[in-house]
Length: 413
Image 1 (tube, rainbow, N blue to C red):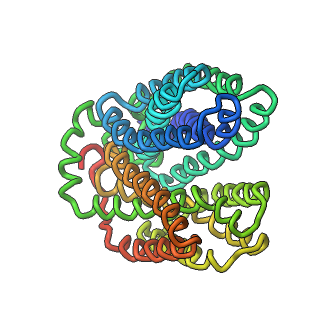
Image 2 (cartoon, rainbow, N blue to C red; image 1 turned 120 degrees about the horizontal axis):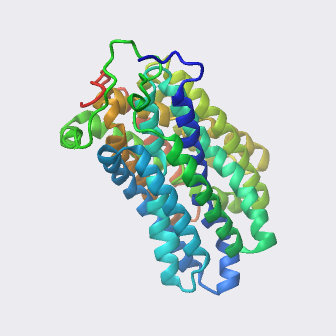
């Protein structure tokens, strides 16, 4: 077996997984785009719609370890295909919902489950099963795909909603997901050995046969007894706490407090998304060359300093510059975290272990989103919330140096 083919098949697998990541990112952007049109069309209260969004975020976080467990048992090909089918189903049902209960069921719970099955865990699994070298770079590509999905879908879906309405636009997303089902099933493969290949860059003597379904059943019991797992989960909790939890949720409101128009603030977030795309790719490249723990130290400390300084910027130019810097670091932590999970718990186990680590990320984001609003209501400003979060991020950077790094067996930790 060899990787020396004209085009290594694993790159086709990456393209299929990226297409699914783009779709999942686009679906997760729908609530923010369609909140106002749905309110105007149905007369439902903002709190009810926001509640459905919260349910979707919680289910999305919890479904990541579920996706990891299913991948360990059935393989990424079947799980990714099922996730794509569920995305098509959830968006189609969302387009026809006539009650708040339907919104909680279809737009909240089912959509959260669907995007969780087709989300970050698939990319992490593909990266570590198909690539022995360049894992950081491929992980960075998947992280950048998430940013690209938002950059592509947000303006496209906004324009489509203005022209055709939110129900027709949602049906269009469902049709797009259906079109993706067949190529995902045809292209994705569980392991390089399914195509008679080794992982990209692997030495010829490396065993090519992957762990059989069920072979990783004991890995989480080992992980839960490992301080390394809790350090990875804890630092990634802070990642969510200090990124989409506080900035992703509250930046627009903070800009409004500063007297900045919503359209201008949205433009700042778009700039942050572009820089996020570049920063995540660069982080992936660096992860292949630098100790991932040192990268996490740099990322978290840089992010923490940015958040501590954020209350000092209250005008458009300064905030734009800060968002450019913050965007470079927004999800740059993903490639080194995924590589550390693989190195410590085995590349075949990444889906399962990283699923729980990512769940901690979402939990941190949810808590930060709530605390940010509570602090703003209590103190009348976001200053204390930003400074507190920045200090927590800097502490996480120092803690990241305590994460162990070893080359675990490819199949079972």
